[in-house]
Image (cartoon, rainbow, N blue to C red):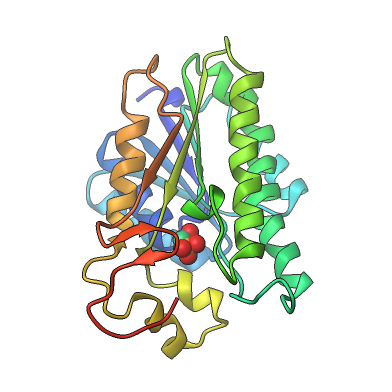
Length: 256
Ligand code: 8X3
């Protein structure tokens, strides 16, 4: 496979990132898994390889600009960059939210995406047919009570994608934004609530069928594998039980 068929996935250690790496490998890409947790991405690379795919791992903190620049030197041409690393911290009102949570969310969701995109844009362009994916959120387009810090960061990622698309039009790189709603993954809610399992479980309580990481990976992979003149600018994907950020159907229970 030519080197231009490389797909780099950030936040590939779990959830949507890991599922996307598996599906892109199954679609024939040589995937490069990045995340902070080396053991996780090493294991996933082995799993993908054992299944007949091509995968390598590279431990990386997307907020570390120097490390990202060093990582990027390994690639002359790449086909796909999936900016998936990020997440939420807290569900506090503006009145009492922790500025440190806001700062960390901005650093991972926005500056992490900026670092990778800046460092890899030359390689994406050199492939003659590159794709940047920004995995944002429905919180990138509208807010909800307690969601301001996360929504502000995801709105930032959305603006980055929209602006980049304007700025590089005419060059051979697509910019795709995928905005998922409620997705039940192993870690998203747990991370948001500092490891509080009971509180994390409440997020999905009574919801008949939240999206899974595979559902979102399927959407990402579909968008990437359209013919290269087709740019899926922005795709919002929610479970059927979620009509808006604040309208979620539950068969029982409560929670955000
Ligand atoms: C995840 C969706 O509703 O937790 O990005 O903001 S939500």
